[in-house]
Length: 300
Ligand code: R5P
Image 1 (cartoon, rainbow, N blue to C red):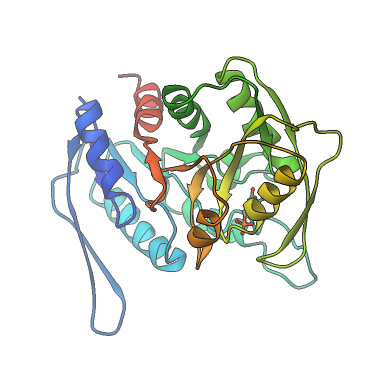
Image 2: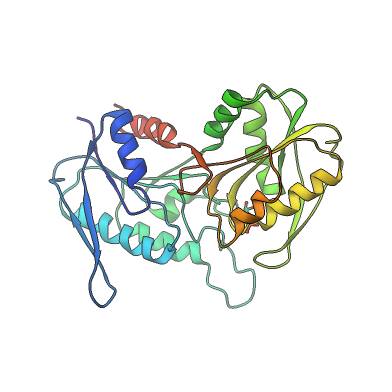
């Protein structure tokens, strides 16, 4: 039997798409606030004895989203869901994965403990920041699947543009994995990365070493655009090196503060993100990639 699908406040659009795309049965959830600000959750359907897929991205208000997600998952377990699959397209707190300064909390470890206590069967994330996490399944206490949204971004580029005379660039060394996928999916383009040093939460410095983009079009691909600081520096550096048209693509367009305006000022050929997080640039859906993974997990 196909699973039930439930979307949280930041995942309802994906739950609806999955129900339309894959034929999963959509169940609603009521979310409201008690007068004192506490979150109230009520599942509006019978979940006992059914496989359940719950989707929510932990963004906009990451702390609010986290509490809503935990309350919902715990209720679903308690109400007798058979297999419980949480899909967290954007997992917040993942970037604080080390004690960069003395005394800091290693946030991702704490968040993982909370998810572990939900006794999930599977946890699916999309391009989660896993740079220093070696065994996510044991950390989160569930079968862990990190899928990529970059293939969906590459399909969008392929559908809309010619990629002649084009190179793919990751704005930092960690982005090489995404640049590689994008370059391969676009027919074996050249790819490379910039070197980034983070100066403050909003400011970075990037340098290009050994990259030749003179007279070429460039597709930049990164997992997250948060304040936009990384992309602004990357685009300016590539323009100074003689790049022609620049396309910016990202999986998670958080676009915090005035990031969108900063990016619009760059005169990009296109600026595109997925709907892992809803934003003005969410032109690509990750629902097909999520649906495929769920079918594989449930072996439907
Ligand atoms: C960093 O590791 C990520 O891959 C992104 O490059 C980063 O989160 C982007 O942040 P911002 O837009 O604030 O520069």
